[in-house]
Length: 127
Image (tube, rainbow, N blue to C red):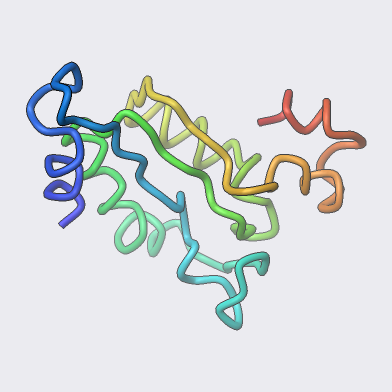
């Protein structure tokens, strides 16, 4: 399904005037947040993350999606927007994704409230 969405948005070539860039969201574990709350934490084992939550994202990126949006939730206590394991380790290093990663709504600025950084400038750098 993820691959079909990407093909539907982007078509065969992004230079086509009928094409728009796909943005796959919300990376990752958004649906597992405790109590179904956007800002809540998600306790996900690495096994479950790799077997359940990551495959649709991988499929969409392999289909050529040029953009991905991080999610609001925390994964094992660390906000997804500043999670080096998922954003750098998996997305960039393992999968080799060269595309654009955007934040969800105000999630970069909210890293201050999570205690990840001291100010919004630091939050943007951490991202």
